[in-house]
Image 1: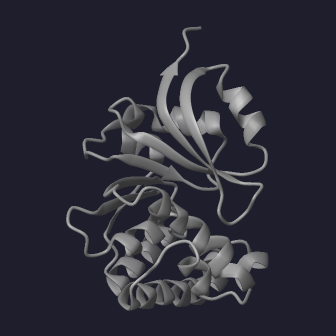
Image 2: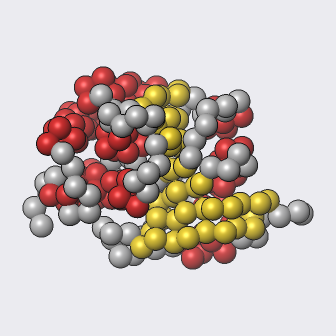
Image 3: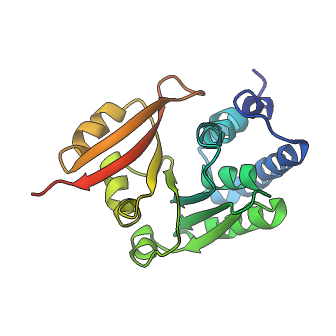
Length: 211
């Protein structure tokens, strides 16, 4: 398949306006990539499939979710893709947490130029979430940390009833075994629509085991 917006449309219909916003995002990523190394260079020729469509799965799977918290947003994957797809929907907001100042500048540029429904929170995840008081329905993260570390990081928000929604690769079973030593979990595993080796893992309940 040619790497175009068709990769997104195969899993989620998008309006012309939304398509133009996604194309603007891809153009900005390509522009900033040489200086910021936002994504792995060997995936540049598959941006639409490997990155944009992969992230668009969240809106395809959970179309009614409006309030997201995206951890370690980096290049905006998945947070900014979610925010672009939700642009214009009443009550939609994606809170993007990122510690790197230059990546925050990139994210703010994307918001300005695409009207994405997002807010950038600059700082370390632990520091930002320690004082978190914004209501969110789901927490997302992609290529950030192991499942155990994601649970440790997001614990303050998971405890409020938010659902963890994490991209995971072919090593998920090992990550789950490790996380289960410290956490009692209820989860749903959704097979990726993009890569059969990957999953979207939905953490519906997470309780820390007593030591």
